[in-house]
Amino acid sequence: MLNGSNEERNRVLPVNYQNNTTNNNELEKRLWSAADQLRANSSLTAQEYSRPVLGLIFLKYADHRFAVVEQQLQKENTSGRRSIGKLDYQEKGVMYLPPKARYSYLVGLPEATDVGKAINQAMEALEAENEELQGILPRQYNALDNRLLVELLRIFNGIPMDMEGDVFGKIYEYFLGKFAMEEGRGGGEFFTPTSIVKLIVNIIEPFHGRIYDPACGSGGMFVQSARFVEEHQKNAAKEISIYGQESKEVNLRIGKMNLSVHGLSGDIKIGNTYYEDQHNSLGRFNFVMANPPFNVNGVDKERVKDDPRYPFGIPRTDNANYLWIQNFYTALNDRGRAGFVMANSASDARQSEQDIRQKMIQTGHVDVMVSISANFFYTVTLPVTLWFFDKGKPDTLRNKVLFIDARHIFTQIDRAHREFSPAQLEFLSNIVRLYREHAVETVQGSEELLKEHFPAGRYQDVKGLCKAATLEEIEAQGWSLNPGRYVGVADGEEDGVNFYAKLEGLYEEIEALNRESENLQNIIKVNLTKLIDKK
Image (cartoon, rainbow, N blue to C red; front, side):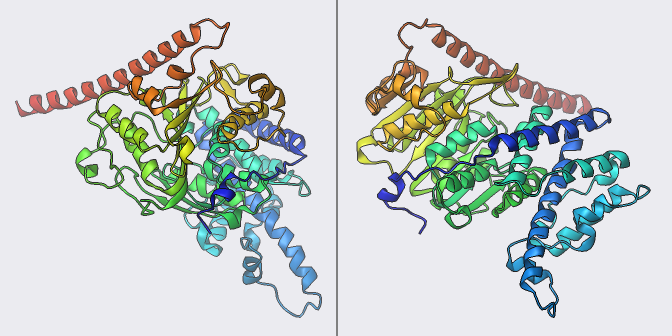
């Protein structure tokens, strides 16, 4: 059953967290340190290095799963009379690895062997035996130095086989994040910081149903959704179905490997979401999650003007933010929830974008808005806003929107990057749970924050933190969805928060204008060149 009852949606199940997180984190750090040191001693860029390394982690994962099932099959075949083949492994739900695709085979190759060629052949053999992997695995290993590959094989061969939990998935995810940080702007195209994804997942609560991400990158939204289901003591493979669309082939391959290494499968298709709807998404999905590219210009409005996915109108400005927002909204079924990342400027955008925003607010389906501070993302240092829709909102909340200003809530992980601590993440999620009159969760240590801000154990507006605004109040603010306009400043704090919020907004506006100016300059250059050529 894909559409749950109100009772099912409102139920909060006990959480089951792994108790060996610390050991896993140390393993991830050690593996990264060793692999990154090898790159530092090579001429490879982070992008050139990342795909082959992720491919080796995937191969080690596939080999581990194969080895576990191989032992099981041998125990079951006590007589030894029946030969064990490919179908036996597939019936157990694992990929079949021919002998030359085994990790142990590659590790045991003689020193003089062309290791890059051998790994390429292993990837080809793995794809040939497993249809779902065709065209997905990296093949550029012959471009890497032989000694470097030997060392990488050795490093990942040291992953303990007896550790509990989703070890390979977490290692893959950790490396994805590190590579995204190293690649900067390019990395942000395929990776959304995990703490942001977790907050989105915690608020939309994807317990069961169809999940869709039309800008899916490395598939992080799907992975965290599955983890949410597992932590609440359910089987993700049985509870959720995964659908995605991605415009870049390289990102799609990373995403499919990411799903597989987490033991997940999904229907991920290549396509430009502005113009193509590969999953016939209208009204189809229980949950939509995404981190789309911000402030994209150059979308052909003639091609989208009659598309039913944009029922609130096509923005006149050359900016695709409100095309994405409508995409997410229209993909939901009549009880669906959506959570996505968006540029701050979209919350206050004027003219035709304001008209679209007003229509969406008046549906009663805008649910929660969360301001996030700067430096959470690897592509931009600017703050962002998380938007949430809920088409199944109860009548008591239909004419309200919950605004949360989380710009002052973060943990500094290095000079240039921030994240939410587990307690901060749980606290922000609990604000929404209290607002919805759901039970809170406190296993990550958010009790003190809850007592401080919600001493009565129920939702209340807190200056500087959260405000449940009515549609009348939103209309009075020009249909703005900027949390800073409603939440205000906490007692005893200077008004500098609002000053910096305005400054950040102005800076973002200047950046957008600079991009527009650059595009206009390019158009002028092209036109001048054509005129000169005609002479």
